[in-house]
Length: 359
Image (cartoon, rainbow, N blue to C red; front, side, top):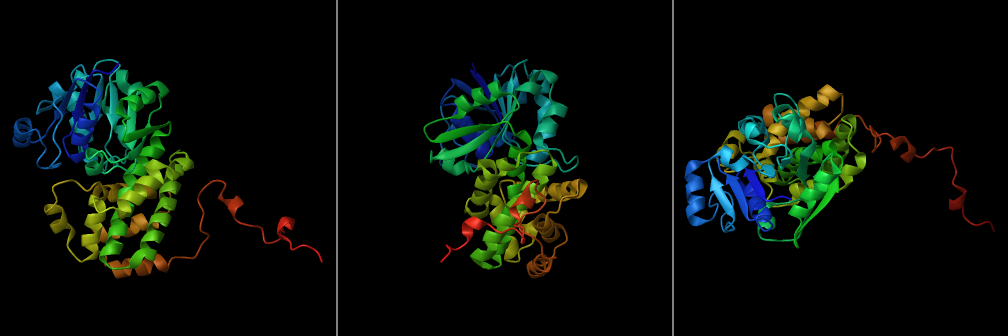
């Protein structure tokens, strides 16, 4: 039974998850990186920087001590930005007891190693918790979950018992959790949708219209699926909440940080100025770099990801990016997916069921 919980990371999502699990247990320690913010949260009972207007439940205890937030806990939730996961979890690994469940809610790919968070956790954390890891993804703006608006997400774990335990803990009258055994697919969907959201935002900022955004979302899902299959994921995962669901939300929702960054890029604002003025991390900026190199390494064609990479890191103009995307060699809609050849009709095959009735 889960009684003691530590949440590592007090951004908007970490604070929301701390409140969520505090509905089920008597004590939740929430690790806050900024000392002054921690003191304010303890005094005002509110994360005024990342989740203003949402009061902390009485059972949530802000702390600047990684040890206090992780020692002897039944469940530790990692919600730090993906590029900081390795160093942060190194600080807490010696405090974890055997059987501790580690839940990763960070969406990204480590830039230096091109590792998913599951691979980072396996490399950093002690073997006694390797079988009790789980990964949360899906369409879930923190603000809306904090406001208790109906939300559905996916929880992936290689261990069915772990998945069932965390599913039961997280599920409430407004937060519905589905389980999956596809750890790779669920993580890739959550990470790569941020890259496509940058493209969708840039399209909006440049005034390219609804047709363009629909094409970006659909073709974006196709290239995410291709990379997923190359890495051993189940293609059906990308049709679910952690795939299409999260992609649609992040590409269209006004609360999406990545779409916001893309929109400002489409309006001609420099990336450095955009990031300087943001309080929260837009994971898609670093994930674009990781996904670009991961696709090259795996030999997977990801033209939208390449286009976003060119905009972010080569300062390529939006108009030229669109021109290059639309001048690519024409091809079939579905390719690079096993079984897709069955979707291409044989011109020599005639379906008798479609023949008109004889006179």
